[in-house]
Length: 438
Ligand code: NHW
Image 1 (spheres, rainbow, N blue to C red):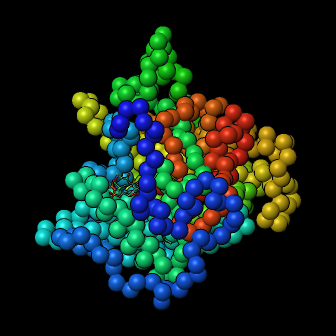
Image 2: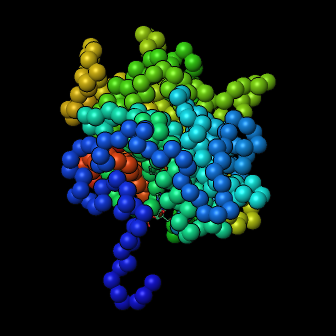
Image 3: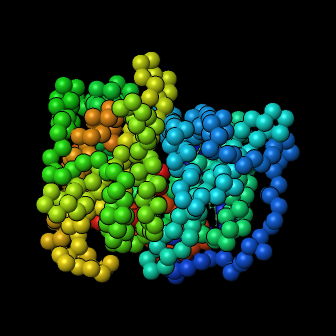
């Protein structure tokens, strides 16, 4: 950049042509930005790629093809600002993330080098129903956009984005949700990352956590030891028969947020919570990508709470001793303490201080137990954002504030900004965001 001049303002040659709010303040009315269209109005042939490249639907159910996506992302996907860590989504994780009920295989979009067949680009969408304030609509949840490092800054990303848009539109879906670490026009919500150390010796060793002056590893180990036993009576692993109760609980709980995933069917919950738990072979469970726990009330046998996390390791670049950071990420949770006793209608949760306090105590108990389980499964750290009701437990459970932000966007939908939990951290209040992106 040049010295002394005004800060460079990105021109956004691509984003300024897209139906997204162009600047803050453009978001006061709720609804679509584009004119109404039908699939017949959509270009029927793929967007043109530069010479030498071709489109390729990736069949993620084929081992060799999911391998190709995994390898592309492992070498070329998101890194932190200091280029110390890079996300390493496992094959099992990608398969789970890309095949929820109703998924479209044409939305798993690869770009290959024509001559060699090498996969050098990828973008994906899955269908997800969202409620944004009072409107409920189908969306494409866009994720895993990646262009090979050697092909960066050649405007390939806009081509991938336009092609996924086209394929989504062909299914008569006109909205999308996506997140990024970067800021483009224009977020509806911004969240911050927090990190709860479980293996402080390793985190200090790899430069993830600082060792403050006067601090010792031994003291940190004691401070962050979550113990061996969970303490909430009735806390146990979620099993398939819990699905209907968990689904009902989750739907009601998420009804409290300005923006939330709907989880309309029990099949959705079965997929996101049970199928991700992997399968047991000879008493050993391989392929687990999500860990879900429920609280079954010992007297009524009803499910009163659910809490979950998923695994997303990062490659540690250039470290002599460690090459993988085992990170767990807080996923969805819910508790029935927010509902008035005997309430039957879906919106009968209460907002009073007493309820908020009950929820605060309950979530802290649940997360204390979750940390025990995450430690048992040898995670080095548990990460969480400031969304959902996370601000109620982040401080008390010794999560430290990270450098990263996660910025949330909607495509072709305008809505007033939603609280991503940034303004409420110290106040232990709910955020407005009830959708957790992988
Ligand atoms: S965010 C993770 C994205 N992936 C990575 O960061 C991996 C490492 N980086 C790369 O692979 C989660 C490349 O740097 C990528 C950009 C491919 C990111 N979102 O090709 P050019 C997601 O997957 C814009 C949106 O030259 P490049 C969500 C940028 O602002 N736009 O850049 C994905 C510029 O446009 P502008 C992004 O570095 C959501 C243009 O791309 C972006 O070689 C996608 C430059 O292109 C990002 N993360 O490749 C949107 N990063 O206007 C879905 C850069 O500013 C929208 N850009 O000039 C909805 C579609 C469906 C609608 C359905 C109704």
